[in-house]
Length: 124
Image 1: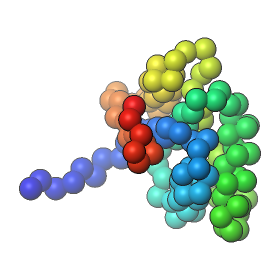
Image 2: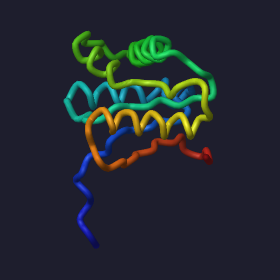
Image 3: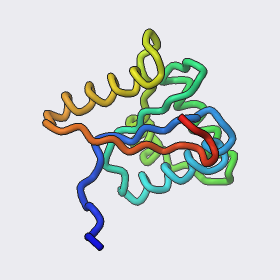
Image 4: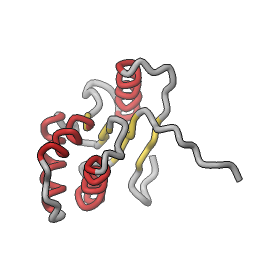
C-alpha cells in the first residue's frame, strides 16, 4: 500500500451547492476548515441554478448561521473570498474547467489537479 498523496489540490469543485446537503453540512464544514486555516485552495461552486458570487456568499452565510455556528467576520471574509461560481455562458462542466484553468493560471501553477465533491447517491 502506498502512502497517501500530500500535495494539495489546486481547486475544490463542489456540485449541488444549492441543495440540502450543502446547506446543512458542506458550508459549515468548509467554514470550519477555513477557521482552522486548513483550506488552501479556491472553491468553485456548481449548481443547476446560475447564481452570482454575491448570491452564493449570502447563501453560504445563511447556511452556516442556520446550523447554529457563530460567524467570525474575519474567517468568513477569507472563506467567502475562496468561493466562486463558474461563468454563466457555458455548460456546467465546461464552466468548472474554465474556472480551474483561470485559478491555476493566476497562481502561476503549471499543473491542474481537481478535487470533486459530489452529493452521495448522485451521478454526474
